[in-house]
Length: 254
Image 1 (cartoon, helix red, strand yellow):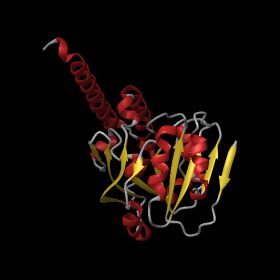
Image 2 (cartoon, helix red, strand yellow):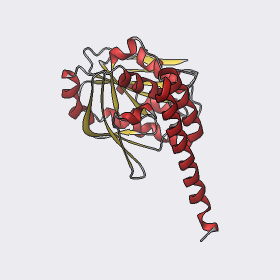
Image 3 (cartoon, rainbow, N blue to C red):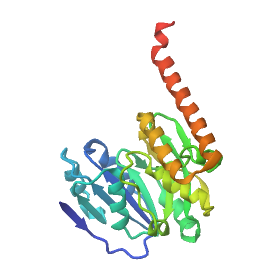
C-alpha cells in the first residue's frame, strides 16, 4: 500500500473524490481539472493498485492532493466508500478518472452548497461525443437512474447511514438516488453543466445495468409499481437491443 495525507484544511465545502485503476492516459486531465478550480474543496484520490504508471502521475501532483492511497480494493464502489471515509467535506462529489470537472464549477456552486439544506444538489453533464445528460427526478426514477453520478453533489449526512454496495459493478449510485427520492428528501436542480464525461458503464454494458437496476428496485419497490416498472424497463431494454441490432446490420439491407 502507498498512501499520502495532507488533510490540514478546515471547514471544507466539497470533497472531490476520484477513484481510479490503470488510467494513466486520462488521470492527468482529471486531476488538473480539479486543481484549476477556485473555492473551498479538497481532492481525494483512491487508486486500486494500478500497474500502468497511474501512481507515478498521482505522485507528480502530490502537493495538490489532500489524501491519496494506492492499494487493492473490491471494485469501484469499495473505492468510493474509502473515499468518503477519508474525506472531510460537507458535500461529496465523485469524478471519474476519465472525466473532467468543467471550469469554474466549484466557484459557481459553492454559494448554493453553503446555504443548502438539501440531501442532493445536481446539474447536468455533457459527453465527449457532444451529447448531454440532463439529470432529473420524476416517476421515471422508479424505473431507472435519472441522476448522473458526475452531476451530483451529495450531502455528507447521507453517508452516516449509507454505503455503496460493493457487490454492484456499475449502478450502485442508483440505490442512493432512489433512497433520496423515496424518502422525499429535499433536493435541488441547478442549471450548471458540471462535468464532461466519457460514455458511462450503463451504455457499455446494458445487460449488467438492467440486472443491477432490477436488484435495487426489487429491494425498495413493491406491488404493482414493481411489476409495472419491470415491464417498462424490460420494454426499454428490448427496444435498445433491437435498435443496436438494426444499426449494426443496416448495411445488409441497404
